[in-house]
Image (cartoon, rainbow, N blue to C red; front, side):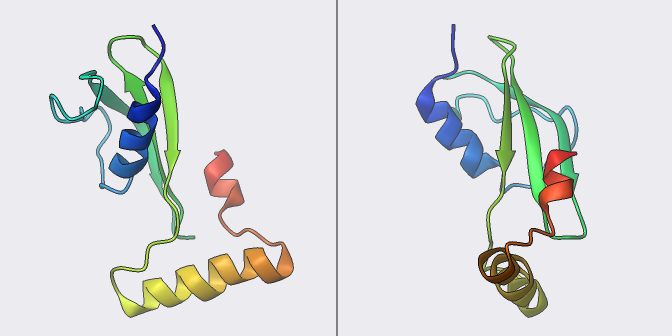
Length: 102
């Protein structure tokens, strides 16, 4: 049994929550009703944040990466917009690539 497409969207949204290893998504939260366990997460100083979820029904894994967030501290917003997104757009340089690949 495959993971439902709507569950991918659900996990994309859930990636913005700060997780702990082995934490499980809220019961009844996913559109399919499946539960997902946090296998690993990375909160890197570069601003990268990603989570690996495992579907507890199928055993399948989903890697969810967070995008640019414009909430929070002013310094974080400046870093996200200028340092990260600006460098990707203008210089083809991605400070978060190494963290995402790890």
